[in-house]
Image: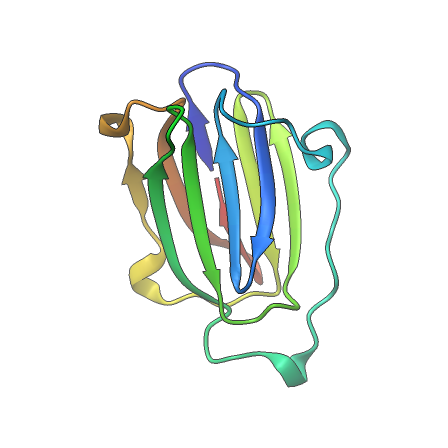
Length: 129
């Protein structure tokens, strides 16, 4: 869950094994922001690593936008990305994550539209909100 101070555009991209979600006015809204929920390629059990999500980081961009960087151990991981009100949700389908990464990150001090990044397990999925 990415809680926003105010409504803001966001974009997503895959960069190698990283999913990068950029939130703020330095972005151009992606097609994911304007469409209904969608799921990327389904993960295959044979390609699963020990942990599908290996790290989560937050950075401020040059134009004041927030950047959530998720390192993926499995590039075939299914991702359901959607917006609910002022919240951007990413569900990683049938994913695993280390216990120390299931947490809330207070990112208010970065002075971006994002205030809080929350990672949790929901059923067999991992949710970043």
